[in-house]
Image (cartoon, rainbow, N blue to C red):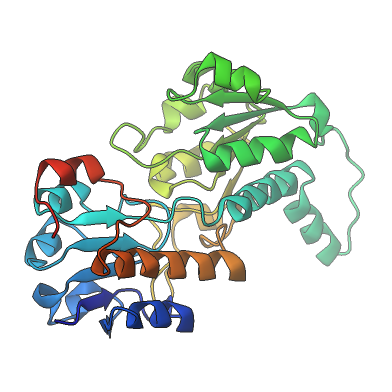
Length: 331
């Protein structure tokens, strides 16, 4: 039988011709919808591909025929991976499709904060040239803290070194030897909070990291500290962050990811969150991974994972392989 592939987020991230070509190689029938509750054939799906849709427990339980969930992107925090594993459903992702893009965007937000571009553009548009300089520091005198030193964290460090920044890293998976080899200092969380002039969040969202920065952590940061988040919005308590920015607990933030603002809404999103009322924050709508090349790669590699499975091959990146091997064997 021809596999049925449910392609979610088909409105906000339309199916690309190459994606369609790859799926045609296994004669897949592709059902294109935005959200899983829009599809009345969920129980028939042999594979699900998704970008930003949530696949929670109840939804996955209905996916009785599904053999693979292919995430078009890196993070799998919107998928109930444990439930998928319990049902023998393979979960794959594309972990490195936008490493360069996210690293570039992270540095762009950092440099914008360092050079006060948002403030200076407002001055220009008001016909005023400010003469103060005391709030601008030479980057080679500053410290960058990175929480999460995976592919993107390392790419950010490479770029930051070109500007002469001292780099601190907080990541329980990194050894002192590995840190020394990459020219960064491995420190604990309190140290990275208290010593960083710029703090970048680049770690995955897990139960241990959800809400890892709230008011107690902001109070440990420097009063002129800058938070850059291109990791996951839920790493931060956004209400506390807004209050910290409003009251001067920290000086500035550059954010590309959000927990309370759904920037993927197909009809737009409300702008009433407290962060929108602040001048000392720069907001971009989860576009750090964007480039023509990165998005093409993510969609084609995600499609290839599905095609590989239905061609009798093993997809290249299976995040729950150990759980699958303990449970249902695919034939």
